[in-house]
Amino acid sequence: MFFDQYDRFYTTSQTSPFPHRLNGRHQAIIARNASIISGKRVLDIASHDGRWSFAALQAGAAHVTGIEPRRELIANAHETFAHYGVEESRFDFQCGDVFDLLSAQSFDVVLCLGFYYHTIRHAELLDKIERTGAQFAVIDTEVTPTVDEVAEAPSDDPRLVFANPYSVQLLSDPVDDQQMAWQDSLTRNGRTLVGRPSRAAVKYMANHFGYACETYDWSSHFQARPEQAASMVDYSEGWRDTFFLSKR
Image (cartoon, rainbow, N blue to C red; front, side, top):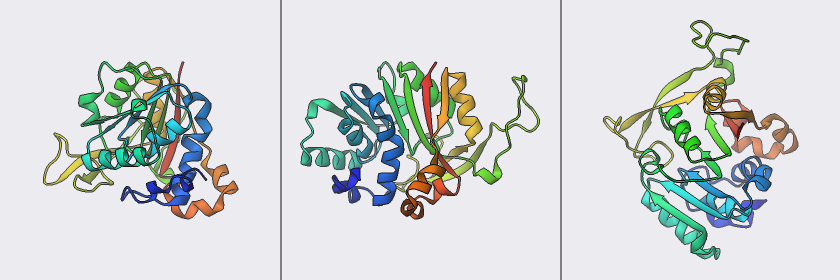
């Protein structure tokens, strides 16, 4: 298992540093896409402690840029990269808000892992991703639970009023929690508004910006690796999913 070889990542963050979970997500996000990542310039949105930036480099990425608002997590990433001997020329961590920093930068691949449900600016973020020139993106996010989703039905109506499956559930995140959203202009009394999109909404927005979209087969994943399900209940119970966006 990948992270068993680099087990510092089990201690450098408070956010779900569980071996089965990290290794399961690595299979879906990095291992599956290693041939796409290899040799590419990668952007890691909300790069956290650098776990996925590091994994992308180990998969052969030419360079990784991480954007992360929490300085302590960037410090942890630098320490871990140094510990494992990663050349400083291969990565860059930028501290700040992705909506402020992500402009006039070009990338081949974008990773948006665990951030898409910590904002309500979903379309704006996809716009910024598309403007980087990225041909491939991975969005790993909480979604509207399967039991709450409206089934998609064929329609030529560009403004679907009834039985619209393209929904976003509003939630409120505490901004002082490392596992939640970062403080932004919407923050009031220590909390900010975020949105959990439906699967259909993610695909709808991806299509608008010119990306074909497919999802990872988590059901088959857990059939093959049942030991991982207990630490990945959000995936196994249907309220988190992994989307692969390919530029048409």
